[in-house]
Length: 303
Image (tube, rainbow, N blue to C red; front, side, top):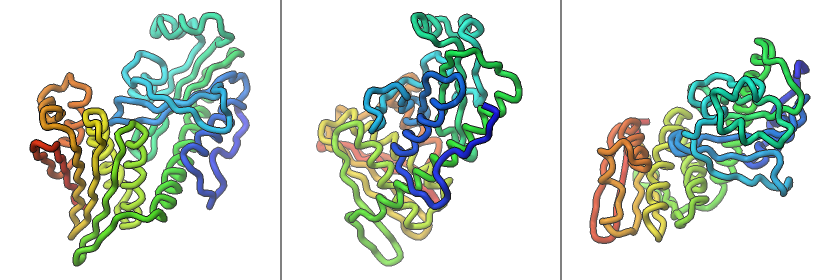
């Protein structure tokens, strides 16, 4: 593991996130002593992780699943603390009793979980399962962190590649003086949340909105679309408008008003209510309208 290798695509290569994940899993699995590798991407304001592992049946595609970011496992703790969590299964057994018990019957003798950051944003992490006992000294931990940094850089490149491809697709767009506006229809299925995020990022990139504002907008949109998809059987529509330095994003679902999640905004214990709290905390302004046909939630960011 002391050999420095190039992680991620060569300069100028445009990857999708799935292609990035395939490359990452292949490279991580090839590290000395590693019998299994997993990668996770942060979703839902840090409440969920999109996870894939190297031992899935179909190596031609990435089989993502969603896991709870609050489960008491090494990868989640690494992401919450921003530090490497590593050790033999014996060393980790007191802290992660249930997780270590699940390793019984496998050849796993040690585990390393490493967070990935892009700038000041926690984007995910990776986990390695070893069938040979490594030494997790300072040099090894620095190497694990270096790998995470390079994977995060490659992930950012993949996100931008997907945004460029998405920007090439026809959209329902219009202009009004100096203003710009685009519209997107979200189908009532969880996978459509990712499509909405890519749609937004692609258009913000085309409008030269800086990465920090774009990241905030994508996070807020993800929360609102997730709520709409969960609580409306008919999906939702998204409108993105940029006018005179003000970015306004509106999500309109067509569910009945009595199914809205707006009421849980005051209850921080409600999982989906926390999504609205994320919007309240990050947006310059936000609001909502209820009627007999559904719910409209909007937020604004100064660009």
